[in-house]
Image 1 (tube, rainbow, N blue to C red):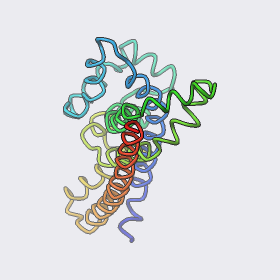
Image 2: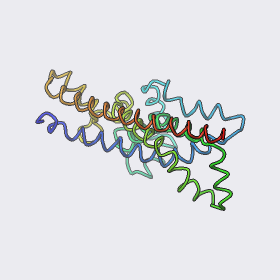
Image 3: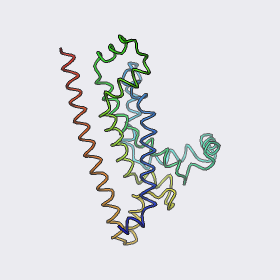
Image 4: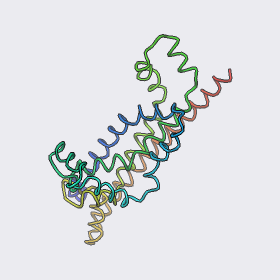
Amino acid sequence: MSALLESWPAIWLTLKLATITVVILLLIGLPFAWWLAHYKGKLKPFFEALVALPLVLPPTVLGFYLLTAFSPNSYLGSLWITITGEQFIFSFNGILFGSIIYSLPFVIQPLLTAFSQLGTHVKLTISTLGISPIRGFLFIILPIIRPSIISAATLGFAHTLGEFGLILMIGGNIPGKTQVVSIALFNQVESLQYEQAHALSMFLLVISLVSLTLLYKFNRQARLFSAQQRHGALL
């Protein structure tokens, strides 16, 4: 317990980063996934590939291009400083932005699948009842795909917890500002502080196990809902 208390700043920063990342991704991802699920244009494969790109792109490559794009001498870097009042590198806002991009597919993909599997009768019901598209989306469609939303949030949260290379490249290793649990764990192993490293590893292991348990639980509910949708369509 004392080892966890000593690493509490890194734990708190990691939980804060993961929570804010998931909230922002849900706010952005829900309308975007809905649009992409119904988009029929020729560029759809490109948009799908763009969303999935962080899955195959090494974190160091993503971090390098973000650092290049937001360097103080660039337009984006100057705009970033104007908006946030600090440079992109070695900042919490910088690692937050990187985490949003890096965890994007882990949140978007479950939402995209859920929207794609919605039966046409749901949309017909909304239009028949005379409900506006926005109200129908908020009060009918989102409650229907709630298991997928929870799965997306859980997966995005768990993925953000384990970030290392991207955080290290953008934020460095500043205690209380950019030092997350994975970096603190690396430091403890390097300095042979195995008791503290074991405590942090167990913390990540427990959080990850709980997250995956919830993920599989709600994925099962989502599959049951999809089966019911298909059965209803056949009837």
